[in-house]
Amino acid sequence: MGTSTTTGDGGMTQEERGHSQTLVYQYLPSRYGMNPDDLRKADAIEVVIGQGAKPGGGGMLLGQKISPRVAKMRTLPEGIDQRSACRHPDWTGPDDLEIKIEELREITDWEKPIYVKVGAARPYYDTALAVKSGADVVVLDGMQGGTAATQEVFIENVGIPILSAIRPAVQALQDLGMHRKVQLIVSGGIRNGADVAKALALGADAVSIGTAALVALGDNNPIFEDEYQALGTTAGAYDDWHEGRDPAGITTQDPELSKRLDPVEAGRRLANYLAVLTLETQTIARACGKSHVHNLEPEDLVALTIEAAAMARVPLAGTDWIPGFNGKF
Image (cartoon, rainbow, N blue to C red; front, side, top):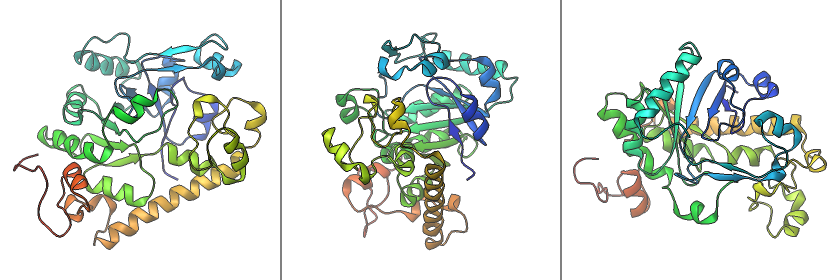
């Protein structure tokens, strides 16, 4: 499909390396399963500083998730709860990010692009810091992104929506003369081609998806409605992936539940979703008179609410008014 995938927290498996055309190794504060040899096998390295659903926060890896295979992959004791740190243990300030990027480049013989992922909170300054530290790509994750490892108060109240984070990040890149030189990938709430088109029009270079891919694979499938009901939820609203009881057999270590997932059929559904996502984005770009999706621009957008206009810094529909705009971004 031409997409890339990331390893996630916890090292790299032979299977994902073998089946991934472009694999990005996530280098997280927990360092679970971190292996220099795996860094060299990856196509890029993503230094994760924060996550949109919990910027500034860590998490808890429940012992029930640490099966024998996971324990071996992450070099952890089986069945014991583990704390996922909120910051990198060898960093004390922003200067250390530059040192870490230099270290990762030396380990990989300067062959791998370095991404820096931040949770959307102060996107202008975080983007500027990442660029000045030498990042090739900035990944900006909004608060609508999913997680299975934080408390509700974080999910509902910490971070900002990706819609409000893109323009400040783009402005930082432009102020440093690095827009389109350092790539900007955005995520958190991307569901369909319209979301992609809006993100690209606001200045992003690409998008990343997570929860949408889970649903495409078969998560929240209505055929398991009775079982979702038994868990106190309903198909389409289940997000307690940390409990390991996913009826669809995706976010679980239960071997009986896992048997329900047909990886071939799930792969076909995901490929179909990605194809439609791309076609929807292209269709919107053509409707705007563009010959390429990357030709979309802020002038192609208007907002239907005052709040959306203020966050995206585009005019309210039917006016030339951008709420809060004082002549500069």
